[in-house]
Structure formats: structure tokens, C-alpha cells
Image (tube, rainbow, N blue to C red; front, side, top):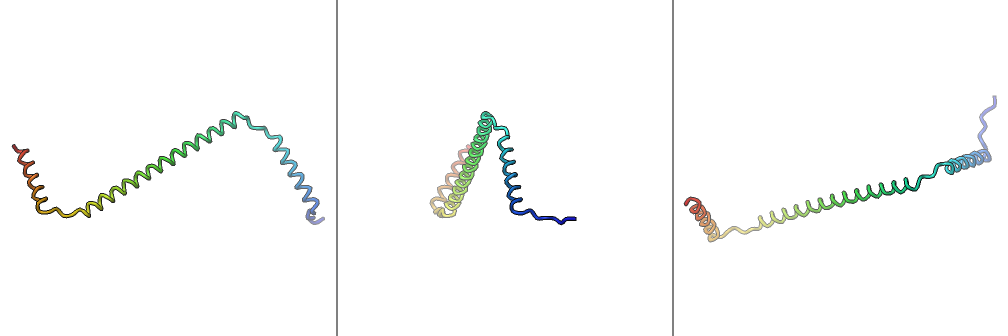
Length: 107
């Protein structure tokens, strides 16, 4: 029984050339895509890209709106904390306004 013989360089090069030639023939024999089909595929891809871009823009605007609202809330809370205590005259005026409103409702 003969042992296994490793293929030499010439054998490997010839096999490689045959494989390349076969692949090239398959590529040339493959049917060419229809131009209308290619154009339709490109249109669908562009529509998907436009839809994705619009969605990304909407998400970005929502995020910016949420950040703006959060900043407004923080500013309002800070302003509330920094609000000075009302003076005695301001407290008296508020109390008198409540009293007048109550009197007006009753009678």
C-alpha cells in the first residue's frame, strides 16, 4: 500500500488556478440583476434610511425637551429656595386679602 503523498507546489498552484477559473466562470454565468429591480431596491433602502433618520431626530427632540423641562424645574426649585421670608407687612397684607375674600364669599 502506498502512503499519502503531499501535493507539491505545482499541484497546489494548478488546483488554485482551476478554482479561480471555476469561480470566475460562475460569476460570469450568473444572471444580471434587472435595472428596475435594482432601482426599486435602492428606493426601499433610501425610504428606510429616511424613516430611521426621522425617528432619530424625533428621539433627539424628545430628549432635548425633557432636558429643558428638567432644567426649568431645577431653576424653579432653586428660585423657591432662595425666596426671602415675607416681611411683617407682606404677611399682614396676605392675611387681610384672605379675610376680604372670605367676607366677599359669605356676603
